[in-house]
Image (cartoon, rainbow, N blue to C red; front, top):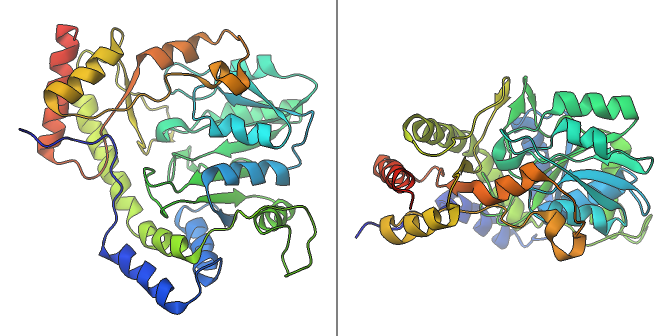
Length: 362
């Protein structure tokens, strides 16, 4: 029987193991020199042109970024519903209200027209998600933010190295957040990185992550323990040396899938956009769940359904809104394996399986 092809696969090599061992033997395991080096190297590697602050998770990064940008109780921040709950959670954790807007059907990111329709007198910001590794329409969203006097925040959890018209994601907004969870395009084991445009916002993120202190026992704000450890930073620093090659392999795998899949809608790429394919997400018009089950059981091909329950229908946020493109995507989207570990034989099996099932109407 064929080996199972997982939908995602973290890549950890001997170099990461050696880096962790070095930290363990150094005796300095909390936030230290590895974290400081990782922050600097991350900003330089992705050409962000701004400071980066490492934290213990992507969600922490969003939460602290929003707090540091001044988002507070009574405010509204416009977000997509078609994303992981952390996006809306982070807004709610500041005391503000996440306001859901619909997505563009092609790229699964916030629709600027839907965003403009959702703006009220309480709106202070817009937080697009660069979903699946494709940049949101930052040109139109930045114009909206300027027109209405709003701040722009970026959830770049899935989009390390993606760009639009030459500008990397994470370099558009007041802050951008990159997740370093194991399944992301690069990992630190667990963690997040916040790219920050403004020195005062950067200072506040650094305060909030460390109990409100920059100097010990001189607490300036009520803070959190959201620090990254040197152990995690050491893993991240090694992964930075590998992520470009992995991204190129993801893009090559995606190109092969797009050239050979039939019976599904393959993911388009917007003009001027660089897609880094954290997920390769197709639309299946009929019986998406049945196709996913048959892929797994008949062909040993894993897949992912992100996100079958949109945020605006989750218990903490249930709004009763009508977001038709979000609902359609939740019913039709299936993410196929695209990770760098795939062999040519794996890619052939994925194509054969999907084409057989979608032509047969699984």
